[in-house]
Image (cartoon, rainbow, N blue to C red; front, side):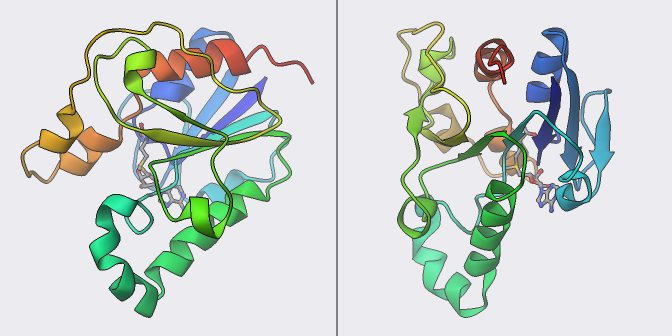
Length: 187
Ligand SMILES: C[S@@+](CC[C@H](N)C(=O)[O-])C[C@H]1O[C@@H](n2cnc3c(N)ncnc32)[C@H](O)[C@@H]1O
């Protein structure tokens, strides 16, 4: 399959699909952290290529309910409207199979409820981080390895310039599940 991983600097989901034998490209405004096929630029530039599948990780800074105390200001200057519009733009693309990933956010109210909410502990990582998935043409992601731990590591990270990156990287267990389960979905 031709697979686009939009808004990914880590290369985690891209490399999981590549390891499963797919042609996968990551795309981000940032350079990729891991050497591999990557378009550094706006995801809109590559959206109309004939992809079979896309996984998008759009920015959640202006959407996540964890930042609700700033919502009024973000609605006043249009940041929230722009962030929602960006997600809608991705969702409306012609790519036949799409997964959009975000934390619990205003998307549930302004767009629609997510198809599922997954946790890292369902995929081999003993941590909690509620992750919503909005799906088109794809089945629900099935847990691959439920583990005991329920650490909220992400919430307790100390402030640092790299904190947002550490918090936003996709868990490898989730990336592998996406590649294994969605990479085998037939047309
Ligand atoms: C929440 S992070 C997702 C990180 C991802 N889970 C990973 O493992 O790399 C959102 C990313 O979207 C990127 N981004 C924002 N606007 C973009 C655009 N128009 N085109 C491509 N990437 C964009 C940001 O640079 C940021 O790295």
